[in-house]
Length: 232
Image (cartoon, rainbow, N blue to C red; front, side, top):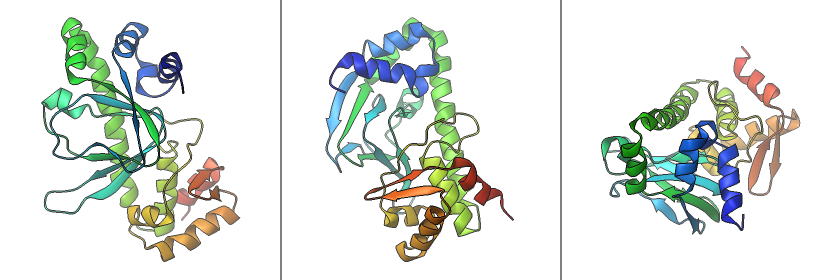
């Protein structure tokens, strides 16, 4: 997206900002800054100082987190339209997760001072920060719930649906997003080796549920893949 007006139009149609009132949306869009990231470049890391909100416009980001004393683990793949980073605004805490560009990406940021200025001028706008927090919680609950599925085939199906943004029962997308992750990384997210997840993915492709391309996977039959999870 070459022009800032196109970025604003995209964010007005996709993700958190699209479901907020026009008045609040305009205040945010007037203050956002566009930044570009190379593949592997960190947006921020766990332990970094408090910062503002971020949204993906192009590309994708990998979100990693860890329990105390444990090694970081890939939790989620963020795609265009996703907003994140609200925790410091609420609690003034350091960053709890690490976010890294999965491919050349464009993101916008709303600086912490600008966030606070908007909310200080209109305290009722905190409800929209609460909405963003609810959307983040929805993703986090999905991560945990999917990992609790005992059947590795069901875990893999659930992961693909979640990463495609169609798994949520609260904020689902109508258009599955492509998944830009290696089979090895997908395997790690469902506690399977690369050799174990490959036949699962190949079987999904044979059934017409997904399309495997070089460097990406796309869900092409949401109902069919969802039926895999419900199957006894």
